[in-house]
Image (cartoon, rainbow over all chains, first blue to last red):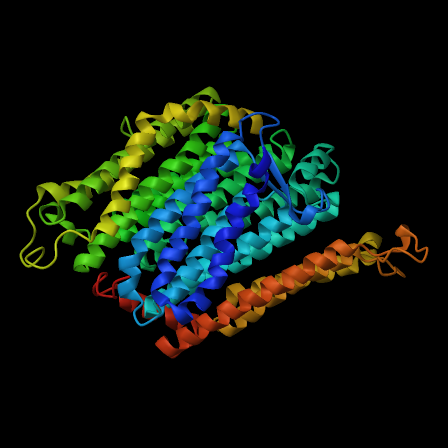
Length: 495
Length: 131
């Protein structure tokens, strides 16, 4: 093991420390901010992928780091198991790509030495997501969640435009009470068990004492994280925030931030409350119904949007429904599907928003009408979008197909045929809203005055991340065998 | 009833929580909403600190022959300390957004902000800046 022992904390600490150094760096060398931020995230990414050598999907296959040398349950534990490592690698890689994409985009949005604030907040966001995923202490999770929330409010408003500030404030007004609910849930859980360490909590909760307090805390947790994950009735902040934020931030918010909240629900259900407990089985039944409603609602709303980014935002609501529905079914296949969908959703939605950003950066086009005939001038971006759209719909051999396969398999295996139907209808809705855009891009002549003259393809540092993401959906689908069996093993262990 | 009277601090926390939630949801003024948020946070702190308290408890410092049973539980207090820091940061971010909002819209009334939102999104949908 050796040096690997320290990797879990380094993965989080490197971007966190670099984030704080950004303002100081900008004082002397503004131009270095972006390369230094990229270097920090690359280091985290590298360390994360190196961990695949030691972390295995086995009962003793996790890495545990004791902060400050205080042993758990007294000290804070950072625990990387296989499912967590999978999420960490998704977060690291997509953050890095979004950061590279930001150079040109943010360079123009935030001129005159204001970009350092963006990079500082970006690194804070990445570091807090990594910490949020990796921590084994429930109060530490709350603290990381707050860093995550505050940096994302600020990033939505970072341009300082009228509607951006309004969207950020709306996000805050929904996000802050949800954080307080999570804190209240933690307080209740502590009063019932006297512990904050997840592993110890699971053992103590299995004894079944104070079942009503525990149930209340679980409901509060689900409500709190439901807002953060934009679960269907609690989603109203998402379309505004995701469509108005700068596009690389939209990609981060949609591809990662809502996802880590869904991952937190999975952690809570399986690693804290335990899948056997009555509280979890009752809550997950209800959650399944809500998530299924979200799949259909998000899909329907996406069809009727005129704004391209708004459409992607509603599609996000639908796909978060997929993930939460998979978690609520609670069997091995559905969980594998939900975990794999975290990867697929991050890649595909990240690619969608970065494509939208490329159109906005080059031409200022936001409406779907304006994308008619886009493929004539920006063929690379449009092709990447079409590839990612295949994954969102779930056509083989993309990653979206693999995750949907497991999700549907899981719902059939669990006897929930209705949920399998919901997944299929969700795919049809996705086909409706994605293929409309693809059709416009490739097969419709541009309306007069649109796409005439002016710049064509986006700069290389914007096209490359878009293509990496969209090819990754294809590769992770065709080559899913590299990880899917181990993921299924990890899902079996979690249950 | 006796259990409620013995645990009056929990009842106080619950009432404070509801007052805070009420002002966050109902009050149209965004400053009052932020005050409501702070009341909500305070109610959770009250719940936590009263959980660790015991009557006549002493500071949890070992040495001098103090008995562990006589000490108050220090963990909730440590949690609240962190919680207060989090609450202050949230308030700071919220207030700085309020300043920006007031500069841009010239109002602190949520109803009027929502009207502005409708009038902004109605004509163009695309016109309201890029971003």
